[in-house]
Amino acid sequence: MEFFKKSIFLVLVVLCFSNCGSKQQRQMDFTQEIAQTYYQTQLVDEQQQVVRIYFYIEFKEPVSEEFSLLKIYFRNKEAEITKVSDRKYLARFTHIAVRGDLFLESEGAKEYGNKAPIITKGKFELNKDEAVLEYQKNNKTFFFKLTRIDEKQ
Image 1 (cartoon, one colour):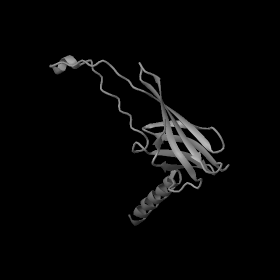
Image 2 (cartoon, helix red, strand yellow):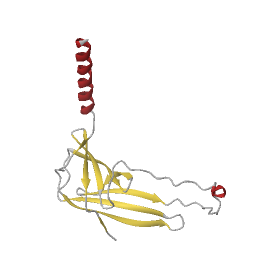
Image 3 (cartoon, one colour):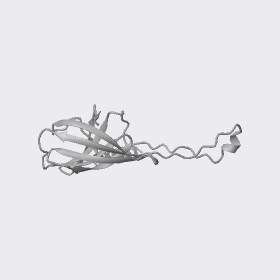
Image 4 (cartoon, one colour):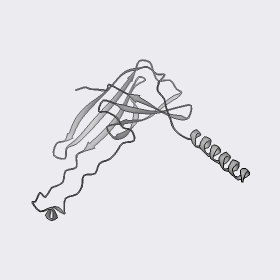
């Protein structure tokens, strides 16, 4: 019985350590110094209420070759990052407001055709002026939280 308990404990410990090695890491310090982060909004289609958000990251120095910037998570959406220049990167988000006709009746049964709103939850819980940068360094994935993001016109 004692051997059985020890073997189960050993298996659990091995499983715990093997799981920790495969998790993505969250880094508090990003070694590349960021000059500014901001976004601009553009109304693409007024009738369909399509809004495009351009998210910019500007660095003080050119980004090192060991870094690979992958994605930005902003306002419950994610977008790929493209390089504009040595110090400037861009992510494009598109938001389409889905509006359907609502049937408002005094009897609840007559409102049967109304669809419930689809609420998507993002990968991270962020405030409106926060985003998360996903990047790779030496083939390991890291996340860095960006704060105080301004809107520019």
